[in-house]
Amino acid sequence: MPAGKRILLGISGSIAAYKSILLLRLLVKSGAEVKVMMTPSAKAFVSPLVLATLSKQPVVIELSENDQWENHVALGRWADLMIMAPLSCNTLAKMAHGICDNLFMAVYLSATCPVMIAPAMDEDMWKHPATQENLQKILARGHQLIPVTHGFLASGLTGEGRMAEPEDILASIQLHFDKRNDFAGKNILITSGATHEAIDPVRYIGNHASGKMGNALAASFAARGASVTLITGPATAALPEGMHQTIQVQSAQAMYEAVMQEAKHADVLMMAAAVADYTPANVSPQKIKKQSEELTLVLHRTKDILKTLGVQKSPHQLLIGFALETENGKEYALKKLADKNADAIVLNMWEEGKTGFGADTNRVSIYEKNGTEHHFELKTKKETAEDIVNTVKKMLDA
Ligand code: CTP
Image (cartoon, rainbow, N blue to C red; front, side, top):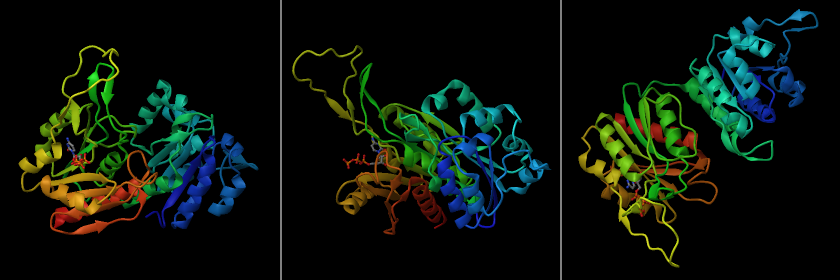
């Protein structure tokens, strides 16, 4: 928990700065001591008076004010954590290149504490190679990225570049301070995302899995010291940081091969991917041209990765499958548990807009082979990942 921790909240010029007010409130409520620093341009987006009132501390903006010099070195050393939220495209670029033209940058360059960043900008700026190069530069310094999300942007467009929600940023901060090393020495293999089954060179059969749950799990395990191998199919969620290795595949067959290659090293195998159950029997080498009124595709069953692992896993390995159901959840979960010889099934009941593919929240139940059941509330996928990781820890320790 951040209670009692000293947090420096850095706000740069972005419309997402309005969310920093809520983040500040959440941090103060959680018991953290928070000081706010802003770039001069951030003042146009959020009032320093509001921030000073909520943090009960003066907000620092200029290197010198009223003939007083602001001690940026002291501020940088005061903090246990510096969180830049929102981090604008411009300030991100300055951080990458060490440009010290305001107090915010002077503090950043003097800071000795860990740094977290929650960028916010329009999609084109976010995806520009210059921004991505700058981002890679600062991540190489060990800063922790709180990934941007997809949605409505200030430009009126919809896309990637929204700052993460304050609750999710708080969860990352909590995780940072709670960071335990209780998975040190453990190898975790996680599948995530969808699969794309080719019909011809330009078409495929796929599903709407976003990879959010699998990637959140991968990040949670890694944050607790595990060595994580993430094998992911196509997904819209950003790839998590801190993986031992990330293997990107397209088809169910490619995912099967990658898992079989890596499985022997794993202590825990978590099959969170939405793998296609069927794949076209023949992939046309050329684009299929439309001809008759109907087109029949013959599909064959894919290899069931979870079931194969259930047959060949060694006794020390924990095998965990996932189920997304719309009805009879427990019954189907227990059936999968038995059919696939898994040690546990994470059941995710589909609820319109709240759970399932693409949602930011989830409500899961975990059914263990020994009959133990765990039921969790509707939470963010990050929090759900923590619940699942905690359950895995108990299973490993049992
Ligand atoms: N899975 C897998 N390989 C496949 C298909 C599924 O490893 N070829 C895994 C998924 O990653 C998940 C679990 O199996 O952990 C889901 O079980 P599955 O029986 O495939 O569920 P559904 O596709 O929902 O199938 P059903 O129609 O039987 O409910």
